[in-house]
Image 1 (cartoon, rainbow, N blue to C red):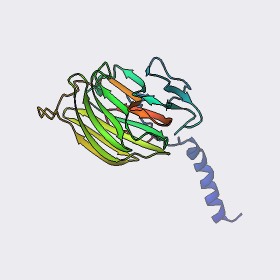
Image 2 (tube, helix red, strand yellow):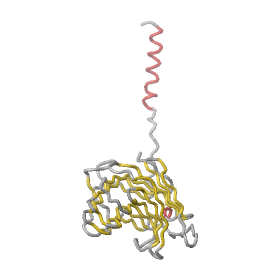
Image 3 (spheres, rainbow, N blue to C red):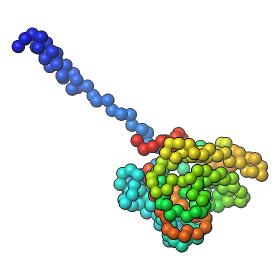
Image 4 (cartoon, rainbow, N blue to C red):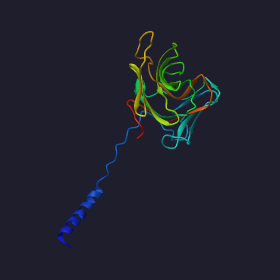
Length: 246
């Protein structure tokens, strides 16, 4: 065999054990959020959630429709329904989330959602709904951000763009109580940035006191003329913006 062929062959044989022994570079793992739920257990975790359901409304984990994995939460409103709700409530949120936090959820809302004020997500003090809380809601098929004070009967609300229907979308939010502000993103694009005040006093910080409870589901103000469903998947809360599921 010619010498010029032997030299590359010998070099390859010498380097082969070294290359084989070199460990493959692993991607950096993302730290788990301070609060998260992907429903992949196939059931509602009673150690994480308290259920609050009225009438014939339904909360269940199902496998027919999911954003990722096998399972997602189904929240169903039957018809006719008047001032009904179905929420999963997480109580005693971790201390770092109580004055300023970010959230994420994948959401699918059926096109039959009523042309009403419907609340999807809340965070606030203990004792909902007789408490102070922020909400992500819809009003006449548009997003609405709201600070609601059920203790002293006051609120500050802001209208937003159209809610996506009939498809999965990534909903992200920022809830801040110092000063009071709510920001929303849909599929990575900021759609709302709402400062809250007591309109009578112009107070704009500490309106909640502490976000000790977080809830997800629906509350319907008014009657549902037809049934509608909401699916939730990959819920998370943390002290920084979370972005999409990796």
